[in-house]
Amino acid sequence: MYTDQQLQALRDALANGVRRVRFGDREIEYRTVEELKEAIAAAEADVTKNSGVPVIRQIRVQTQKGF
Image (tube, rainbow, N blue to C red; front, side, top):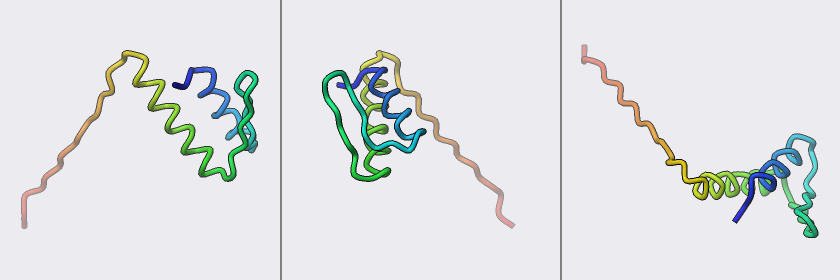
């Protein structure tokens, strides 16, 4: 389970071009930027899921009358 602070640390690492992130006494080095982005996506999903705030999805449908 990720915390808001861990998510922010991941985002900061990406913004600064760093692949090594420290969470308390643990340090993780991601092999690629893509791997770091995947970790951010997983952390965002985890934080959102555990925040109690419902995820709102929106589907837009657009139609056009044929010629």
